[in-house]
Amino acid sequence: MPQRNGAKHKPDGAQKPQGESRLQEHHFAPPPPATQVNVGETERVVSAVCGGMLAAFGLSRTSLLGLSLLAAGAALIYRGLSGHCPVYGSLGVSTAEPQRRSGRTA
Image (cartoon, rainbow, N blue to C red; front, side):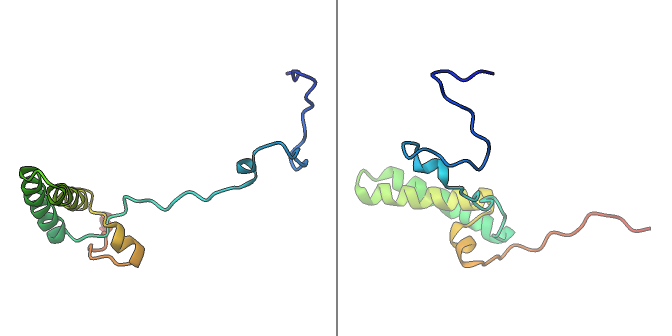
């Protein structure tokens, strides 16, 4: 396919002109999966229930404190429903039981 405006196709590894964006020069590694379950089953249920109560209480308040309680409750609900705690992930902690293989032996 011919290039327009006299631009020439450069093979890979060719130097880029100085006018091109520096963002094109960097290669970023994808982030680790954020949905890895690292919260145990009982802890998930307690987080979801307490988060729901905290969010409901925060909604009943019309203040900055109420908004803060709502945000904290939403974070606990997320933790309970997804089974992932970002703080645990950062610290390398997991309270979830290891998954067992479902293969059958004869």
